[in-house]
Length: 146
Image (cartoon, rainbow, N blue to C red; front, top):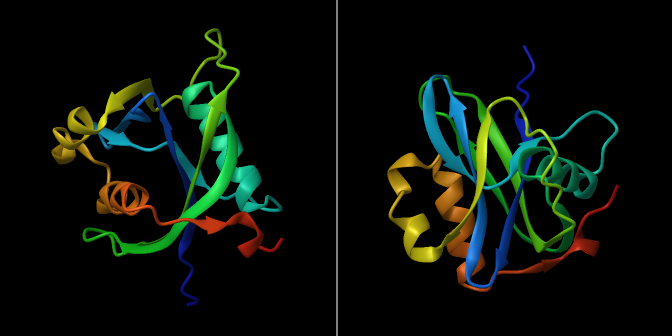
């Protein structure tokens, strides 16, 4: 059997000292995550993070930089995830857009509000990406080739 990690993308979007996050239900539990999701066949990583942000938050993401690339193995099912985390700005909010089925709502939370809800984070990657963003870690999008 060939090992196949799951490729995902995520976005850290900060505006007016608040971060765009989503509350989503996973296996019957309410979790908190950055806008994130799986790369689809034939899609670039940049196109995937734009699409996932739109589908989960109704905001249009303009990616500007890559924060990092992360590997995480789920402790219960041993699935491995490779996450590409981006940052950028959000615009063109569509209040009439229906969000993905598992998304309950998109929220803007400040750093203190976000850190107070660490127990709700979907995975350790949420905090890892946030910490790297806050530390100023950035890489140019030209690092990625399609």
